[in-house]
Length: 324
Image 1 (cartoon, rainbow, N blue to C red):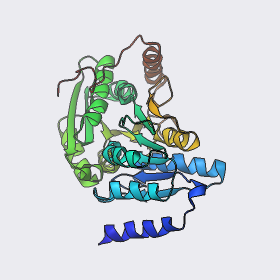
Image 2 (image 1 turned 90 degrees about the vertical axis):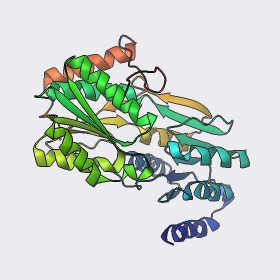
Image 3 (image 1 turned 180 degrees about the vertical axis):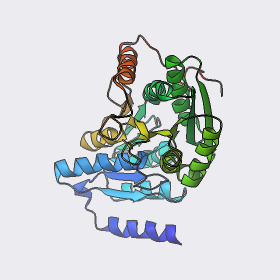
């Protein structure tokens, strides 16, 4: 009943929306708007747009898979424009509703939907993951590093693949342990399981673990803090969550993608990598003492070589790379 009630509240709230106002709408995916990761980056992007324009926007947090299409359609029926779907799992809903409302604009983050009124924004996660892999291998005292993914899908394997390439670039003898949290949407919001997987990797000798798991990562970072080991955040800058044991965060600028989509819709496929400022790694006061000048220099050199094309980071989803 709770899910239906929330959707009813959304519909009621939308009922008073004027079609002429054409507010943008954001439909967050599983894990919650304040997951301190992927969804929250999207929230920060639309909030930036709101502050700059002084205009309102509509939003809905999906907590049940059946709500995705319903929420997108209700937004469209009330004239929201553009409608921004956060996450690959929204693709089928965006595709279906976009066909029904050809005069409205839609954006899908992390997947490609080939329709004339849809903007698809995808990222070169492998490039940002390569950089944090370089840093992880340099920081490791054991020569063993770990990776905890969320839902076991090709997109998260892309993170893992880039991370392993970066780690082996910095230390060809490094050993990489990897686990996925699950095979359903629940894998994005299971901190307890994230903590368990991290502890198991620590028991095998890993001393740096990269989480690409949404809200599940919170458990990874806590486990690292408790063990006095290092963790790497994802999507948003998560260095502040456990200062002192967060080595860095792999930035995926979902906030920039959402801000740009709300500001000026551009149908077609937009690909954001290091060169475009779509991915990066985070440095701030929270991790400054953990990253030596030598470590940073090596990461920066790798970053420059990826941007120039000297280093080609294989893409798990395109290059048949990384046999897991």
